[in-house]
Image 1 (cartoon, rainbow, N blue to C red):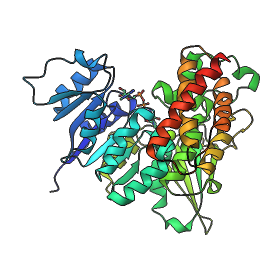
Image 2 (tube, rainbow, N blue to C red):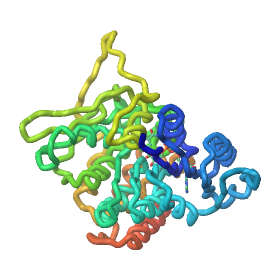
Image 3 (cartoon, rainbow, N blue to C red):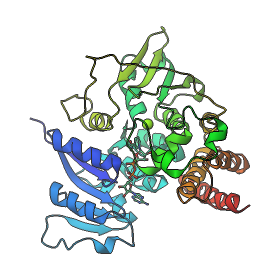
Length: 384
Ligand code: NAD
Ligand code: MG
């Protein structure tokens, strides 16, 4: 019998983090040794009580002090971002699940790669900001990056039907979000509640807004570019409202291989945890006893301008991903606070990307500086 895999779940209190714990509850041989949460301290403490990890990290400095006394418990509680890096690189850890949202997840993902860990990557923003650097560092340290984003997991699975040099296209599927059939005019007045109401996926707020603008697909184009080392010219997007076909890989001979399953993140999370094996788990299976409709439709680049921006940024590389991501993170926050309108999000992101001082070969520090600059530009844009 092989020994259990030791897993650290960074962002365990979020949507992906909670689904990951459902996978651990259901699948044998997975051992949670570390958990991290930000502001939901009560949930983090309850997870620690149930899973009894060695380490628990609270990253929100305003909330960490409220973590219940654990002097009688079997785990240690640590506060702050630095502890997160230590958790991600701990010697007893086999797999780090990066499930923090936004660039806040980049330093700990970097620590895991630096330490040669297997990184199960949900946090797509990390790859958008520093995909080139992370992929290079992983080659140096022998770290493995396994995708958790459902489309990228599907591509990773489909890729195994051939060799990387036999891939002619990868086709990312997109649900199209709640405004798939809205006119440009209708999109000007959508509310936060409407934008958060995704038709097929149940996700954290940031990812839900990104899906509504289709900025999520823009981020995923860039994520795919670096994860699979494939040029933007070989990446395409197709709208698939039912979210059953999670992506498609086309090979040079004309065969297209797809991965299908009901829309549930537990499956791609589990695949990253158990790869290269497949084992029974908690994810639902397709019900084909009644008729199932699966549509594939071309995307509308005019109503969803974020998409074209995603392709451009994937072609540029360098600092472009960091700038687009930071502008988008700030814009989503501003939209959630009712400070800008829904259609402002993509408009502002394009303007900020176009204005920035492009560096084709940035260091990690340059990327953080580009991120800070873009956030400042976004505040300026809002009050211009
Ligand atoms: P979420 O908002 O539900 O959870 C985010 C997690 O990050 C929480 O545990 C929170 O405590 C933590 N966090 C927030 N701010 C932090 C900070 N500053 N420092 C440290 N930790 C912080 O988000 P989610 O939907 O679970 O998404 C997580 C990541 O996975 C995102 O990058 C998202 O794009 C990606 N993803 C999500 C889904 C999905 O279905 N939810 C699918 C694919 C990819
Ligand atoms: Mg996705």
